[in-house]
Length: 434
Image (tube, rainbow, N blue to C red; front, top):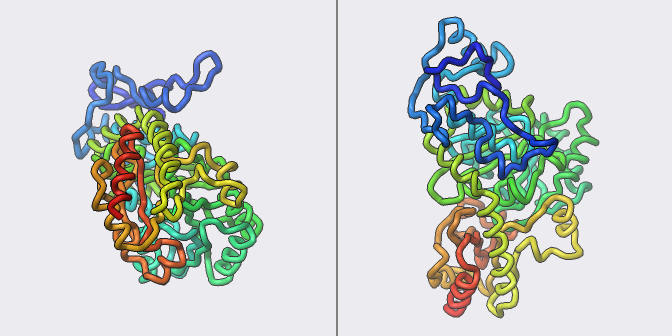
């Protein structure tokens, strides 16, 4: 948000009275470069190289007229959002700088950050969904997302239909047509790769199917881009309207914070911001500051983890106690491979490992790990492994888990930045314990 010079005083913790440098000599600067300073002017914070943490609940207005003007923006009486800092439930310097930088990765118009990935998803759904609506989504989804849609919103008369993550345009169009006949479709919600099976959704096919059925009354397409974004997948380029992140994962990347984000077009971000202002799901200043630190090394961390995953998966696919490895780098001559070529620039570092056997074998493998940690979550500097059917997706009904490939022998692994040969040695000895 660009400030007017008349709103800036030396005593006010405002952050950006002049345009940022976004290009040099006609060359557009890359996100990795912009993470070092975009959205922040050191002159407004006593020359501090990095933004200070603004631990304050409220901000002093320049005058009463400014206070009224800022609240007109916060409450939506005037378009464009707040012109200045108001109250930490609405905005703050750390959060605004973070949102500026987060939008850069997908070249989005605007971004919002939240107290968790689920608070981002919940705020999004509360913004667009009304009682009696029919949500269409891909499957599987993160278990808490399925619970929010199916059980919590279901209490208010919201229904849902889904299609499998790898569905064709014809299959997607059939589900959308059925949903349209049931009632208003406010949103199409995707997750790609699907958690925890690692199956890709054809975003272009979803957008084409939506456009052919809904014309000018098109429901927005929102996609959870946590597994591959923002480095290896940019869904906004392929027809999605909103990208959702658990910033806890790769963006945070050190397993020491919880946060969420949404990026996309201003026209859609604005009503989500109004909902966030009301229910108070914004990220806190300290977490925003930590994320600013983490974004500076995002590309380095994700690149190293991706290289490690390629080496580890190559070892695992040849092991006799491994049934299969759901790693995107292994896709060949299939619909999934075609989606991968069109949508992704890297295979990521989180994958699904199917062991020969069932829960007993999966537990034995997990219990024997020495370097990799037995914990949920993903995208950290350390390698993590878990059993989705018994842990993150335990609340999903057994029949649905089986239909979606969330079986007892499935282990989800997120590779970190350790030495890859050490990780291979760890997995080798753990498999020996099965």
